[in-house]
Length: 144
Ligand code: RB5
Image 1 (cartoon, rainbow, N blue to C red):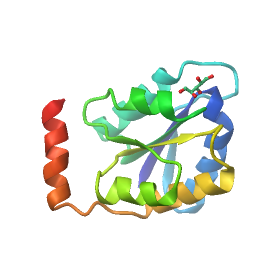
Image 2: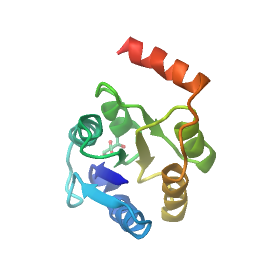
Image 3: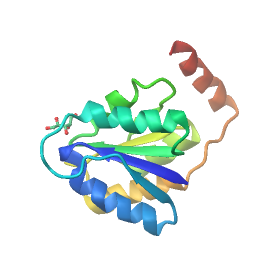
């Protein structure tokens, strides 16, 4: 898959680690910044990654800020984005199987690196189940 990733300064260090994981898992990584730990505004990166998913340039996105909250709220403002902020592997799996989350958000100041990697691996390897879940997602789309 083509995976886009973006973060603010609070998520920069974790972004660099997650990029390596995505590559060794056989996926293609597209880095939407930021490129260092200088202070930036997370909405810009949530928007960039969200728009890349909706336009079809990438298949899925990962966004990271300090808590994951601001950048997930931002990504979810892009029409067509279902961004799930996850801090555990069960939610990561469900976010794909039930919610078809096309963007995963992580908190770089909340999660340890090993847990964050596990969350990403589970999410990348999970598939949407469709069926009744599609009906619910259609209802979300109707609200946009
Ligand atoms: C930046 O200091 C911090 O507010 C940001 O990374 C994020 O946690 C916001 O939700």
